[in-house]
Amino acid sequence: MKVAFVIQRYGAEVLGGSEHLCRLVAERLTVSHDVDVLTTCARDYTTWQNDYPEGSDRVRGVTVRRFANARTRDLNAFNAYSDWIYNNPHSRHDELEWLKQQGPWSPGLIDYLRRHQQQYDVLVFFTYLYAPVVLGLEVAPQRSVLVPTAHDEPAIRLEIFKDVFGKPAALCYLTDSERQFVQEQFPERPLLEDVIGVGVDLPQQQPYPRMPAPPEDDGPPDAPADRPPDEAASADDDVPPREYRSHLLARGAIFRRRHRLYGPIVLYGGRIDPGKGCEELIQYFSEYVQDGGDATLALMGVKLMSLPEERFIRFAGLLSDRERLQAFEAATIVVCPSPYESLSLLALEALSVGTPILCNARSAVLVEHCVRSNGGLYYADRDEFVECLKLLVADGRLRAAMGRNGREYVRKNYRWDVVLGKYERIFAKVRNAR
Image (cartoon, rainbow, N blue to C red; front, side):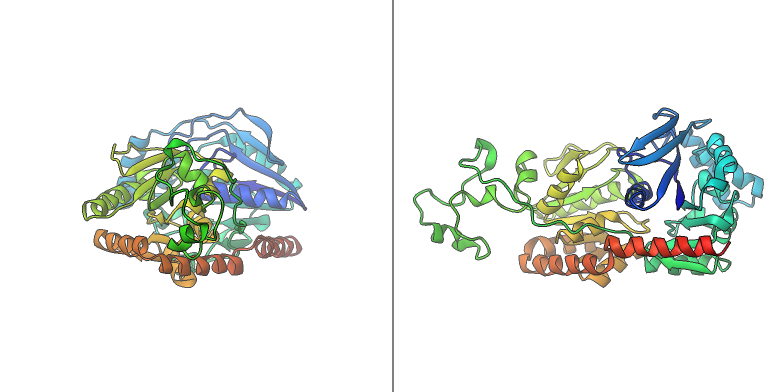
């Protein structure tokens, strides 16, 4: 089967929930299908500047066809226009102008889709919000599948999105919370819809190297060298006697040593952006420290806002997949501060390695993960954030129990074989319905 994925940005360097999810699915489906990705030349979602060259490319075994954007985004002008359109009567023409100002605006992508749509058995559109999906769904709706990644935000109430949710042959949701929200918001939907989810790999415990001696910056030793091995291990019954110091072998040791992190770590990963709740996170974490909390807030990902120079905040940068795994294992808690989520791979990756999560209660999806997994807590305000964080940092047994629960939750609900099987059934039904 020949399948096309349509997405606003695409690339191994592109950070974003829907973009990352699209890439994960496309890479796995290319094993059994002829897969193309149709996308723009943009890497930065704030400007939609053409950073990638136009034309065909191969990214991790997937054919990617990139099309130039005809304009970049003036973020201040767009925000002002959005504020007006959300709060005033307006026309469909006004909403289409909003869509154009939001970007990405790539007429070449839509022209290619119109000219070549017959060669694809299924068109899979990721994220309801952007012009490539809104305009692309008009080309061949009877062969189109929409993965909307929808959540409660002002834009979704614009009239143009009623057509977006009503046109495709099938809707694929990431969570039950997303399905419930869409069903309440859009009564007119395709008959074919299902909760597909996303696959998450359950990593094995990482083997850390046994080193004969630590570097000087590794902190104090666990026990004097002349202490018997069984006595040195008595402080923690879970740590077996060993020849070398336990901090060289402990879970997450590589990440801790590389970034010189000691004590409890509260980890965030993704776009470091006010829109992802990061300003509020830093404010709440500062209150936690002022209230006597003893932990470091480590942030990994692309920095799209300035960070205060505080001893308790550490920027780890953009990490490779292996380094991200090491960071999740090193973390005491992973925090998910975004109020707008349709899935949250951050939460699922943390749970998959047995690290508990602390989530923003304004996101129904994050609350769903916490409740169904019993692998995390959620907060509605600053005081709840501080108290939840204190509890999780202080109670190792609670963290261990939540960690076991989280791994089991991911194993039962987010295996790739189950997810890909659901996509295959949706594709078959769409093709057979024609």
